Image (cartoon, rainbow, N blue to C red; front, top):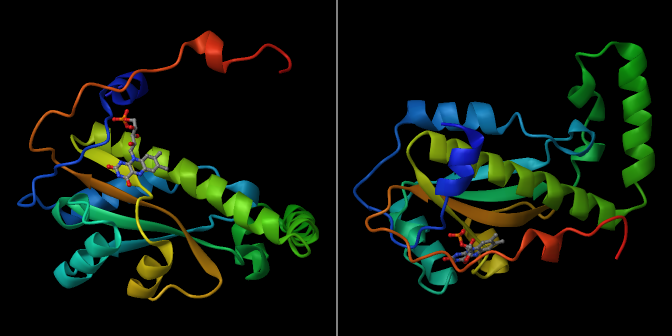
Amino acid sequence: MSVSEALKQRRSIKNFDPAHKMSDNEFQHLMEHAILSPSAFNLQHWRIVRVTDAEQRQAIRTAAYDQPQMTDASEVLVLCMDLKTWAKEPAQYWNHTGPEVTDFMVQSITGYYQENSQAQRDEGMRSCSILSMALMLMAQEMGYYSCPMDGFDFAKVGEIINMPNDHEICLILTIGKPLTDPHPKGGQLKIEDVVLKDRF
Ligand SMILES: Cc1cc2nc3c(=O)[nH]c(=O)nc-3n(C[C@H](O)[C@H](O)[C@H](O)COP(=O)(O)O)c2cc1C
């Protein structure tokens, strides 16, 4: 499937088939490609909690105002980010590039992040959001649909997945097979309403 076709087909699904399961091979294929996504300084901030346990899924559904995707989707992925990737052996993100590049990158990473908690969070959110789109497009190519979700109590879901204090949740991505066609699309703004030439 072409990227343009995947973009046209993708919709946010509300009612997934609870009987459908994604195989481990499919999951592997999905992840292998999605983690090729770009991330700031190649820090790969994403930590993905694949929720399979039925009780845990029900607890997340309750924390998500009873949205059915949380129990019915084939995959419920809590896309978290590690706010402190930059401080955790940063050389590991640049270990294929030769020592000069590695040293330069480690210095740049440390200099940029160590006094800047907003950047730690913002860069993680950006990187995880891009990963999320890659997952949605891959899912589409594999014959699945998805729904990115932030309609839930973030603190509660953090507790349910036992998230460490130096992590945050970006969003939950649900993936599965739809039971019915989605509602018509809400409608897109015109390109000229959202693209500005040179400045506001
Ligand atoms: C950050 C984000 C959070 C969203 N949260 C939810 C959600 O909690 N529940 C839901 O059903 N859809 C959610 N959506 C899906 C949007 O409602 C949907 O993308 C939008 O209406 C456009 O429809 P489409 O994705 O089918 O084109 C979310 C989308 C984004 C990007």
